[in-house]
Length: 276
Image (cartoon, helix red, strand yellow):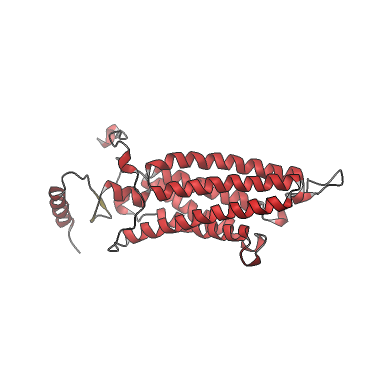
């Protein structure tokens, strides 16, 4: 194992060879450009208190893995692949697979000072938890929606589905906010938020149609929303492979459509006085 002094000499030598590129150290020994840093952590390389980036492993792929498994399972059921119908058998994706890995990643992104992925993972975790509540028949959430005029009751009632439709509309705007902010990162991440934002709004439309009794169009919109969410999962899967391959130092670089170089790097977070 090389000594820290030897690593410093290597870093200094690389800086001489590429003076135009600002570089940092990852895990104490690997040189990393700002562009690679943003690919791995989905956040700008800005001054941070402490050296947690060097001390701890990258938690971002962990959050992506949880999201991918939950997302793609959810999407395939929505599209009815293999005759699938109903989410009760896979309700674990809403309470364990997705949220636990996303929340763990959220906490460690916070420890490492990675603002954007921290917020994104935290928000997506609570979405899975909240939407999973709708899939638990033991909660009887549709019980208050009893029919009073001979129309559909419970989960098929107009009021029940209109509430869920409104909820998904709000989620669509929240995801749209993340879409705008993700323009600072890379094209793959941006397209993920494009597809999941559209998917949330299309699913909202499916619930609106359920509330009006148009079951045929509701089913078509559900499949369309599932397809958009499936695209999100494929892109997230690709992004997971990109990050893990880079961390494992595979001898190839998968493109992500870096967008960071289009943004000015001059604005940096001010270092606290005690860190100066």
